[in-house]
Image (cartoon, rainbow, N blue to C red; front, side, top):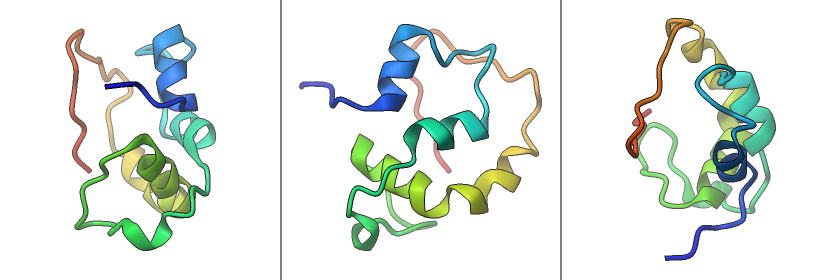
Length: 87
């Protein structure tokens, strides 16, 4: 499967975004993009199935969820293997 051209994916692949500098603000700033999919995402219920849906979620609801991220510890470590994040 081809990887979509997405700023968040690129940022992780190139190391621009990594365990040392990841933050909710960085995720939102890199990923927020109105993909025209607002009607297809169901915040709190739906599963995001593409980078475009993640971008739309960050664009539409990113500032609302920023407070939730502040509760995470500052020393969060990302595992080396693929990871699924469930919000």
